[in-house]
Image (cartoon, rainbow, N blue to C red; front, side, top):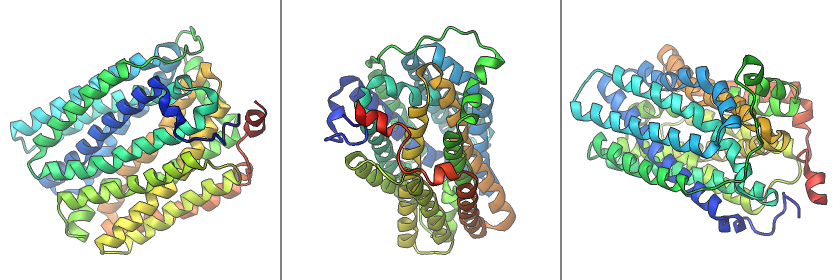
Length: 415
């Protein structure tokens, strides 16, 4: 059966392990998204400083960058499910600490950044394990559907989380953190109930040679390198998530609920797009779809920077999320198809570095540019740079931009 053309995009949900994994991921993501809205609004409410919004991203990215390659080695050597459960436990601790900070009534925000450093450390170990374990959860012929549905479920949580977080924040940040604690407890329980196929044995001791194996592999594959670096620089320059609390209050003049809707819009676009991809996976013109998705992301960012209309901003963010989803879907399939299981954790770690840099470091970059040039100019500049990166990468990686089918398409069709 062809991996790319399964008759049902939802048949994989009959797999109990995948269903538990998916449920755990949705609940955990829902908790983190709700919490992110509360953190951003709470910090900006206390300090009113755009630079502090950038520091939220930096506090998470710095430990992530320091630990991620070692986390990839751990995902190849130790049980990936156990790593995920342990990291969810640390995230739960972070939610409890944020609740304690809120109850203390403190108006000094450095404890929040310290908690986010701990959160970033847990995320560093969780991301490679989460990416690598999916291939061990489902049969090979169901993998592309599992990727699409996993992405769809993730973005459903991204849709609902900010809205719920914004609504709950009306009763104060403590209500958001209490809800996050409850959801993370349920997520840990569900993840502990999963069982995956045995992963390829890797007993190599940690060394610079083994830790850097993922980097060497990515560098040797121009298709993989081009795909993940395109996402890095496009989102690094074009990411606007960190600026949304200020954009909501100062440009659109809406409150926490409006912010929640703005944070939801990209997830709504991504979720709808991922459902379409689950039902009708991309079969041809893979490269064109990937670069087209990034270009849509850039154009939507430009529209966002040029409007003061709440409705137009929602549409722009919706299209931004849909365009990003196309590139994320293609990149994930390319990385997983190309990677042997015994180094999948380390390659996923490299992929996670690029994702983390584009998200958290991008938030820091957005905070700096906004403090330098102003909020609206920073958003507009991000859109221009994203489109510039798209053009440069199309020229620098022609094997990717001209790719018609996924590399293993013919092999999977024959199976």
